[in-house]
Image (cartoon, rainbow, N blue to C red; front, side, top):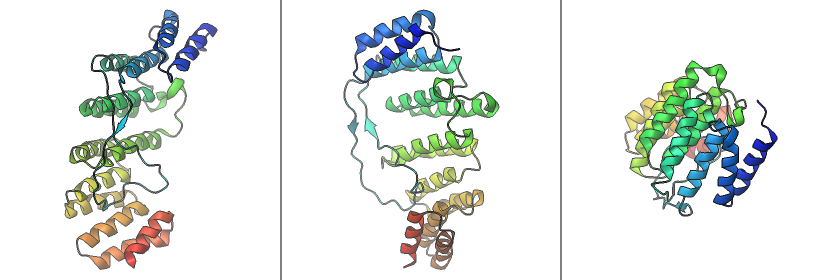
Length: 282
């Protein structure tokens, strides 16, 4: 259903005020918007954004990232880096109001995947990992049962096929946890990786993430176990092949490691992966 002029005007005024934290302007716009559409998905989303903005009492403060050796590669070079961890100062009275609006939106519009991911991000800001894990699981469970109904922002079609789109979204979250270089965040990454392989069992990156967790312990036999599962899903994935080679080196199996590095070079799929393999062969 197309938006009427008054609704478009109210929506425009709200999003004009949002970047400037002009809460008076935002509130007035929301009241006008809500007159005719009190439980429209976009209104509920905007109300959540309003309270999220009000709950942010200070700027994002980067957390110090402790150094550590990364034995395995998390993602191919063509993928953008996931954001580093940040500490958001959220007002404990206002932030739950944003949660309530977005949970209501998910309840009324379960086909809108963007609402699930928006809520998952807010749970992460609130350091409520269990709720983040749960809402992502609910999103994937609904999507598995209703693939033809799925929509994205503004009730538009997904930008990419569902399995590719959704798996890349959760992969970025997992990588973000790993990049905080803290054991408690690694455990969160592990749990999300298990969620990933539950709903996307043919995706090699889920198994690669689990292998990355065991490499950090380190537990090289378990690392190799999950890398070989990733290899079964895609035997020509250069990232997985490089990581198998690195793990075999840790296990003292240099001859076997060379075989995997040579395969990366022969496939020649990714410049960084090839350079990594050549360095290990020198």
